[in-house]
Length: 371
Ligand SMILES: *Cc1c(COP(=O)(O)O)cnc(C)c1O
Image (cartoon, rainbow, N blue to C red; front, top):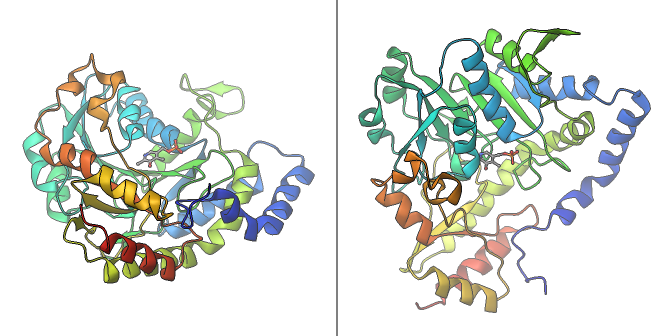
């Protein structure tokens, strides 16, 4: 049975745009150009504008975007096997996979109890002579940044990579996410704030050389046809997905405003002492609205019986995933906030179909619950 307040219904998200999407896809079909082409270039131009003039390279998905950034730095001698990358312990597995796929060593730093993102006060203590990069994951759509810490890291030659998969359209002090660091990865996975009808992603960076290397690596390592300067990959953006995204990006500002309105409605109405509401940030785009509750299982049962959809992001942090069990990353032990978050976080409906009225209703349902 579909809950009265579904967590996310992707079919219903697409429905109002279906005519425009069909027209855009038909243009690709009629063009006869099924790799690259105008829609891909248009998407890159939009992402460049969105990030205040960064170089933008459309790629196959968000994980590949992150992988290609590190791969490019390895190919150009900026990083070597065994170099370290500081990552937030509380993140989605893909942030980690991009590091380990490149034979780099992830070093987990705990989450901040309010932001649930990287605790910047703990970053510098984790830096070693082998640290080459810090990954800033704007988790849940909340920008994570610290100008003072970043300035000191940069002075030591440390790169900042943004995992912007969940935060398209966000900003920190007016600077768009995707334009804060040395490189950023975007994901257009269908559930993201701007989602394709399949996989897609992008890299943005202020460095033209890095953008060129990423573009070459994503296209068999070739800088021009039949001339391969790197042993590359095929991680190209699909023009049909680009066409879909060019339609969807017209609605980014509305979508962001809508999410902020929903978050405000939740925030105004939630008032159960057993629930911690998420902290706010002026540049937040609310990919998820994540509350915390020590009796999460009990709250979930209450939500289920009241027709409220929910999800958990994420119940098992990367350092406790089986894929890392025989690696040093499994011994990430000093991350108490991350461990508590894994057991307490709960995402409430924040879908394009959720109305502020729904959010207020859901908050009232939660207020009525006694653990
Ligand atoms: C979705 C996501 C990714 C990966 O993006 P894909 O397009 O699914 O490969 C990476 N990092 C974070 C934080 C994500 O949420």
